Length: 476
Image (cartoon, rainbow, N blue to C red; front, side):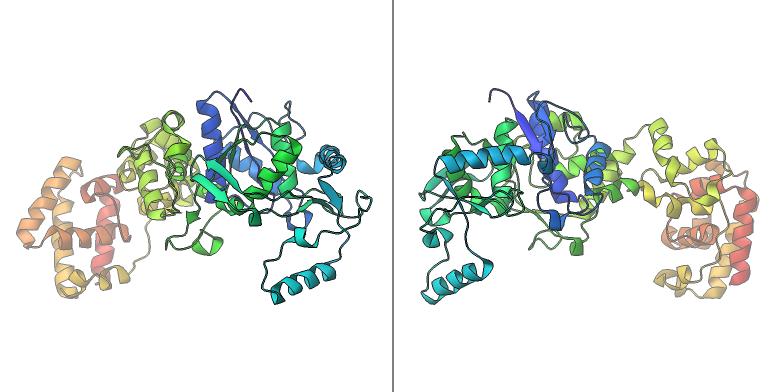
């Protein structure tokens, strides 16, 4: 193999989450930085675990993230077909070669017989190895009738993993395993080795659950006369607690959910790439082009990477703050609340600029801007749940709002005049900004948080701001 070719080979068993996407991203980065090829292969030989629509979902997820593959199920290429279920003749060809070499045999045992062997070894305090119960007689293998097993030649192995370093295992890790199941479909252990050889894959990037089986794979590579590809095994993505693998219970979401909620693709890729990898500097924010240049498998750590959604929120917010006004407007369009329906583009743009600094993902736009477009109902809890405000008592709160309204009635509602009057109110009321401005903000927005007060009042406008202040005064 003279050129770099990587693959992402998921099973169609459900949605794509961060762990799977990270594997795809690492493989895509290695291919792109070496001007190589990136292949999508669907490993769909376990029919019992397949989920309808998963293949389409995998394709949609990769394309939504910009992880374009050079060939795959929907994109013809010289390595096709790209679904294992369409490659059965290829596996049968290599299985028959192993039979001819004396390195495979028909498995004659029933499940009950295998269970008896396991019980026997357990009683004798021995680890169960199928090769210790290998049948004496050689039966003819019947395709799509009986399983075909690999005849291993146990030995110790030492191999190098680009990420995990030098690894080794004794001969006890090598055993006879099934190559072709009785239904005619290959096992993963057989199919991926044949596919990677046939497709000339140069780098295998996959999860740590396969390390224990690598000695078996190496034994099969030797039997087939294949040179193993470069192996790279990233550590698992851990849940927020950091003590177990990330799962749905920990909030592992479909990657498309993040995109639909308004996370930016570059931020998602940056965050996912940084789960276990860094470039050796303190730099945290990378463009996609910078990731392609900076990434290396050698700098992926050996220990698990904790999934921290707060860091993702911070990172996505940083990307949003760096957007140009034009890009900001375009990306925000799908997220405006229904109440914004008749607002003109200039007004929408002003509201967007006010929240850009605090916006963490575009799905927050309705919550952060709804009060700009409609009068929200009074929410007494906003005052009662604020200890500093509630302890002042309603009479004083009412008095403070009346002073604020009287001053704002004289304003032309320019930003300069509003800022001046609000600062003057701090002196005349002898109240700190944390109290007075919070009170005015609640009265004019009925929201738990808002952009800077003067800027918000300017956009809301004089008539609506005064009316809202009066409504809160009357309620007090």
